[in-house]
Length: 288
Image (cartoon, rainbow, N blue to C red; front, side, top):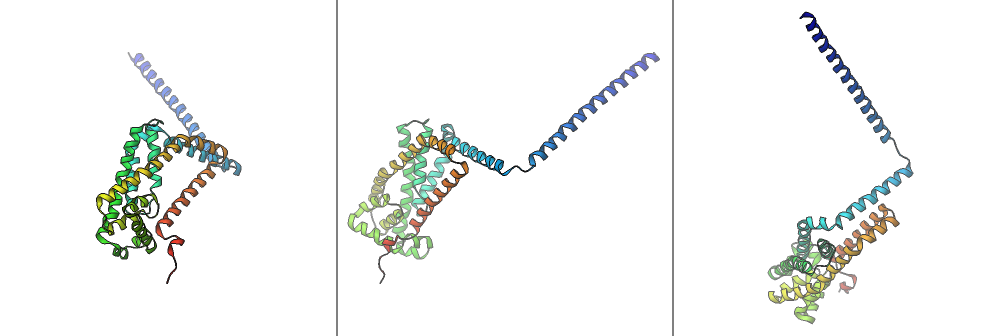
């Protein structure tokens, strides 16, 4: 009995020693692994040559561009985010109608773009019909706000707000008044087609006590002419834009393409803001 118990204890002791030996082996392997990882981190943190950094920067820029383009031109992504896309478009169009210096062209073009993508890169007429009313409703509501503002407060409201004083300057007011004297209610249709004087036209329609029904009718007719044009441009961009962008990223550097796109967008917005904040030189006329 004593011998068997000793052998049992000896067997347990051998098992403990074997377990300890295996644990030391695992610990040693982990130390070698993490040591190698630290060495690799040190190696990766070492500075790269300038030429190699430039190539990496260009490759990263092209990758970023292709990732963004892939998302924007993806029909599934457009369908999944349609609520957010149309929500932003509606808000921008409404605020633009109220007089804020926001261009209508960009959200209207984006509407045609995303409509084409949500249709699976195909033209589905009823989708464009829905999009037309989705964008026209906030446009008309924003224009009605400008009309109501002019009808209720008149031109004296310019003295209260600096933004209105710039938008409703004397040269623009005189220009729009000339339209109303020459064309009557059709001046609303004309003002809808001319960027930079839309708010002034709708505001002056209110100050002149134009009937709401006539105002909405002429404004809607102006939307029937202008909105499909921007929807068509957005559709063309959705159909041909991806191939052009891929060709451009292969021909020129990705960083250069991003810089050109940002500069073009900044110049476009600057032109819009300057056009909506002050009169053109030929409109100022001689001063007494």
